[in-house]
Image 1 (cartoon, rainbow, N blue to C red):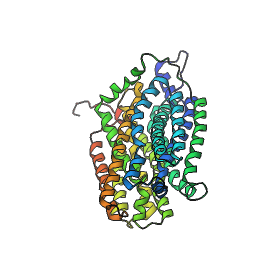
Image 2: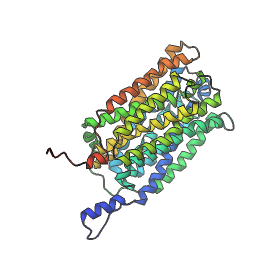
Image 3: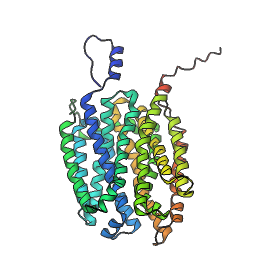
Image 4: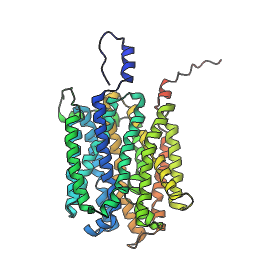
Length: 429
């Protein structure tokens, strides 16, 4: 926020600051959106090249799921590093380091050897951990806090637009003009260019670093001793899993089991990501507009559960693209806990709060991704995966959504309307 000077009264200063946009951080936020878009596209891209990756690396369903799931382990771990480094050093160097790590990881994944692919996937996850955390950090300094949920929603909108592109756009590319290996190498080059732009454009912090390097993790003591932080993290993580693992890795094979042709399966799976493009900012805006988080979050969870049930267990009841789009829009509710975790913690730990949130969210995905692949392998017995196999395995996602609903009931309302409501007088009139 811009700093006011002169003899302005403190209350007037705060009102003015609330309405201002600090353009250096706002412009850097736009580049962070490009970073977030790119990493999401590279995260979801493997789902449209499952046959090519299986043949190139000679992997089973469990092996391939484990390879692609490697992304989430460093993502979860480096989410902690990202949040702490942003609070201590600002966004400039941490964000640039993240983009360059994503660039190197993309090139390694495209080299064609299993060892390089494993290293590349790990680097992709580590670098990507700085994208969303950095974007939220910059947004919280570039825009008024009254529109935090909207800014977070638009940030996720760009991410899921990348997820959409990683399926809808990448599919025709890797099955046509450039091939899957060239795609990863070209992506790495573009990421390197983006890293240079981030390094040049992002404002540097003006606060000198104090204490040891380890002291930068001190804000996590505040975040992780707050029970509400864990509730936010688990709710967000449970709502992310059906999309990050269920759709972005196994969505296309599921739709093929439903009888869709390869091209149609890619398009229908990508409709879920496109739904996030709509749902994340829309639900964030509604939550800001009414000044309450929980009603919007609970409503999204209910619609998400109904849409998933229709897709997997009652195929054909809803039009194909309508079902996927509805599921994606409702899944945008998973971004609301990102606003809530920042609102239940002090302002001076914004980066660490988002880092802790990402750690909790993607730790769940890192644990479930190989477990889901193992369950698919067990149920299929090494044979082609049928609809009944997916219907049994996808009960995991049904349980996750139901549990998220229950935990949401214990979240504290953090919306503006709840914070500004007058206390009960206790007087009977």
